[in-house]
Length: 78
Length: 154
Image (cartoon, rainbow over all chains, first blue to last red; front, side):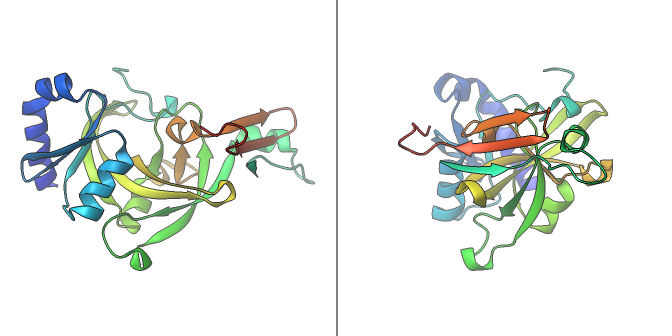
């Protein structure tokens, strides 16, 4: 989890430029570097886990809010 | 066209209408690891999934995710009804066999079992976006359909 938190720090530092260049794309971060940007989550997973064999790595959609799934678990900030 | 039933028939004790109201549309799916090991060695397991049109995102019970050793691909703090909580996100292969649907999905981990929630998985709108859902509350019948290519599968 510590590794993932380091990648999240880099993601947060780069967020303005990620939102400028890759809004709506899925991005992969590994070893504190942006590995790539992808149109779908499946493409990001295939490239990161299957092709490059990098894990743990952060896979996050640019612009996605951290909202929960359902009215049952409704977010206060949705 | 492929379709699966995920509602309830009436029996001696309860009508399908009552059971559907109580339990919600329920579907059996398989969840499998991605990426960690060779396909033949990947952990997978069946689970009962609630079809939840109120969920924008599909969710998995965190204990099931741990048991299947799903890969954590993100973690975020979410402000939910129980206050802020750390939520892990998992990458997993979802197999809905009756619909010939196998997809890699991004799943939020929630303490469903620990909250006495009767399902281990919530099928949200991120999965339902590929199907047709017919909900007959007055009979207890619910059908999920996948259009064929000839019918304009999306």
